[in-house]
Image 1 (cartoon, rainbow over the protein chains, first blue to last red):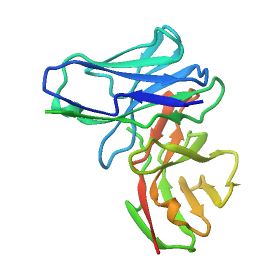
Image 2 (image 1 turned 90 degrees about the vertical axis):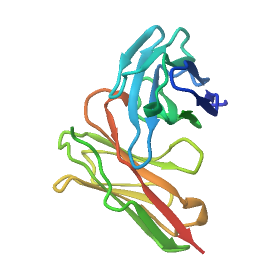
Image 3 (image 1 turned 90 degrees about the horizontal axis):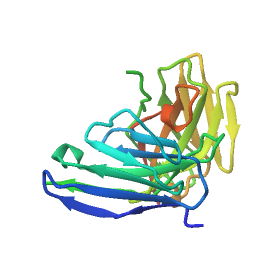
Image 4 (image 1 turned 135 degrees about the horizontal axis):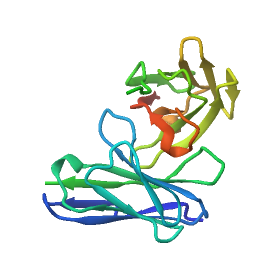
Length: 112
Length: 114
């Protein structure tokens, strides 16, 4: 099993550009999450999904959209990137009934 | 809002010594806690968890202690090794949900000295 994978690993955007981050998991997990991690701060939840076709807002959803068309994939979109969205983004997944989250390796995004 | 915090942002220990990493939480209703380890350039990795009806749980070389009276959590690593160098952070579950109800602390960086 590859676990949780994220694409791309690094990306640099200009203000106003759009992009999509892809998260994939091969563990058949029901729950998937997108977090951002900023220096000196804990992980903050952006959006999450409790199953295919369902998504919900987390703590810091503004400026992001998500989609979960397939159970194994969770996409995070930035429609118009802003410098404040410079961060490291982590995807995670959880099996139904459990608390432990399995994290991907992260995507480092810089918005100029 | 309520959040999880850490007493020390950095901790340096000699190889072979024991390490103690602390975490203070503010939500008395939190029922479940997890410690994660994050190595440089990698995603967080589960270390150990504890439920609020317990005050101690042991794993391989790690022990988590929970003091609900003062809302304090600690992670003890025995015989610290170079491979233990990483950022450690705790997470508390503040609701009945799963990942969407976790609050993560900012982390403590553990450096193991030779």
